[in-house]
Every structure is written in C-alpha cells, then in structure tokens.
Image 1 (tube, rainbow, N blue to C red):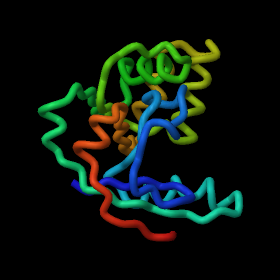
Image 2 (image 1 turned 30 degrees about the horizontal axis):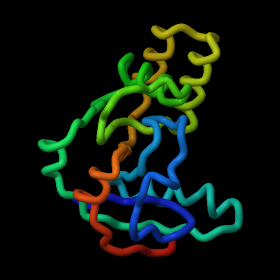
Image 3 (image 1 turned 90 degrees about the horizontal axis):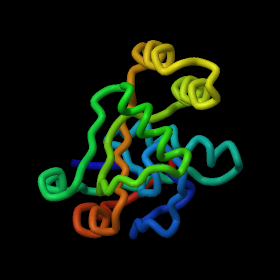
Image 4 (image 1 turned 90 degrees about the vertical axis):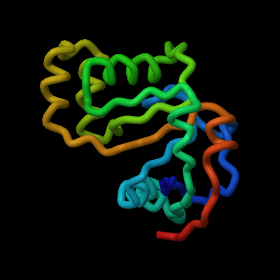
Length: 157
C-alpha cells in the first residue's frame, strides 16, 4: 500500500525524534493512504511561506499481522477517548500503529468542546457521526517505521 506524508520537506528516513507529543494518536510518524489529504497537510506550511512536499512510501501490510495495531473504523466513543488521552499526555497503550479518523477543523472543534466540558460525550459523538472521517495511519514505534515503511519518492505541491 502507498502511504503519503505532507510536510515542508522531504523525509527519506522517518523517525520518532522529530514527532510531537499530545496529538491525535500520540507521538508517531503520521501518514495517510489519501494523496489529497497529504496535500492538505502541506497547506499549513504553504500558508507560512514554506514549500509543500508530499513524500511517498510503500508500506508492507504484513505489519497489521505482526504488530500491535489499533484501528478505528469511524468516529466513536472509543476514538474520542483515545484522542483525548493522547492529547492530554495520558496514553500508556503500547500500540505500534494506530489507524483512524483525522481530527480536522470541524472534528477538532467538537473534541475541544468536549475536552473543555462544554458538551457531554453523547453530544460530541452525535456531532461526529455526521463527519466523514479521513484516514491517518500513525506509526508509533521505530520497528513499525524501520521494518515496514519504505521511502519511494516525493514531490513539491
């Protein structure tokens, strides 16, 4: 499977050193199988006057059988709880790969309202069910990155 990463530079050797904590699925290297989504990820860099670079990777899907993987098929209570744990630094799970919906602007706003106790969980889930999830695949261990993700090229967008 081809995966994409949107950034301001080409990343030929992804690692966890440069990843941020307290994001959707925790510290990891974020990719997507959706090219247009990677291009959108480049948008924030382009708005700041930087280049937009989409890097391509071939992903060995045997990782799904060999590693500890968590998949979210939709925005759900479990997805919401996991994202909140990761964003608040409380995630202690040992997943190598986490796959699921992206907290885009609309989704992020709903998550923030819930996080700030301005809406309850039921209302948050109700709002999220109308959002079509995009897909992000977060590789959270060096093993997941080094053994299963292989650089295939890049382009400026």
